[in-house]
Image (cartoon, rainbow over all chains, first blue to last red; front, side, top):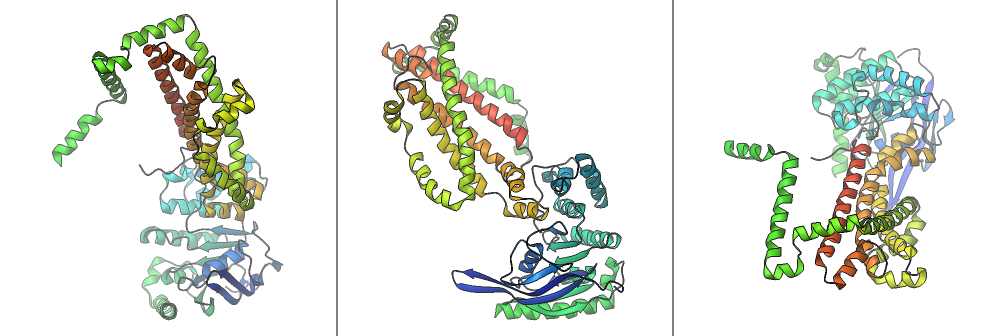
Length: 262
Length: 262
């Protein structure tokens, strides 16, 4: 990704310690990372390596014990509209229609009903769900719900998109489809993406850079550049460069799994 | 398998209305049968005697007076309980110090039958309307507070996070997430609270009132007028069912968005 040299998100020696009944648990142990503008970062690592904690710190939903996160040089002190989040559990408001869900953030910002409606419809079209605008979440499948959640995050036009295993609860086919859609959307409307997954293949097909985290205490073990050309296609998954990267990263992650089990 | 399917479809072909008529007819037949036996006849007046009483009391206007005053007490006590329980339940859900002080007492008083504290209320508020409304208020308030508090505790934390990252303030979260998410529990509380109100009504009226369905039953017992006793019981039952239908209607209107297991 030449030509994008600006640091969008700076993670600076972030440490997060949870104090519990059995003493302190270090979730993040001095994590530093510069995320460039329009990069697509995928984070992989065994469960308990602090991936979600890191995402929550960037989102401003968790305060780091020490260290800080900066977006465009400004320290994060809570959630902000320039950072959108997509959760694994979709987190759609079940009492609102699909359209009203996508309008939610816009209306909080004081955008008028008519204008927010128009914007929301635009993003529903982007995820191909405009015909479900008046449906309630309970009428949608898991994959459709997550597409609504993505549209909702996009609607407020954040510069950074944080995704916490968004496709983790979906079946393999839906997941592949949503991966392709996400790549397409990202190419059309560039955003800085921070995407957590436990699926190495998913990380390689999406990312410009894969971050491998090690567990207990959580820190960055390796950063792997994925220099496969975009648009990425599902066929690439069969090809040698992809398979090389996948098996290399998988090996690194697997080592961490073994560490955790010890 | 084949016959079971056929069997099932036979029963499902009968419309709901027909079932209701069938059930009603069975109950009346049973009633006639019991009233015709020697032991049963002492307790149960014949259906037509009760019907004659109904015509009597409707034509002289006394039934309406009894029903009106009882309904007034239930609605006044319940409404008061409803309006006050909502802020209390939300405070309990959101502020730990408030919860820690109040919750044990709610639990404590909840297990005391209203009949036990009626003497206290009558001594304090006299035998007039005030005392009856207060007793019904206490009974419905306790049921409502416990149920709504349960609802506030069960609000999905991810929904609150999702709202927060879309830019919601604490006030937004309260009105746009916590309240709608608790609506199903508020309605369940309303249903339980109304039935507690009716139960308590009769108890409150038995302790002394000049009018009211409970009083009508009490007085009739003194004259050994079992037809009036039965009439009073039936009317209370019908009021209860109508109230339940009303709440169910509201549930369909307000919480149709819920994912149900059925």
